[in-house]
Length: 139
Image (cartoon, rainbow, N blue to C red):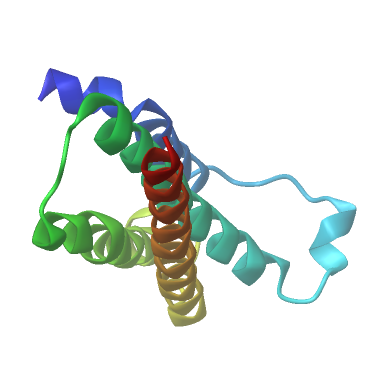
């Protein structure tokens, strides 16, 4: 367990930040006037977290030899973040005393972020693996 914590520190930090930011009352800023800024924020937070995971997985796999099965990767990069987003939206709707509201649109933005982050992460991993294999075959 400890090796996984050491292998994915930024992913863990991103998840903790999502949880903290999901339950505090944000201050009003000029960005409040940007259309759908909240949805874009959800998309970027969840997509970024999944992207960070893929970068750390790349490092763990190719530098330390820590390999995860495809099933575990799907659970970690798709299922768990979507479930986390849903649970957070439910908690916001029912447990914050009206300070935060759980919205289906936020959950959809979370899910889109997860799917985009996974797509970009997998593409990045394949590209990096291809380049690494080509460098090794040249030597």
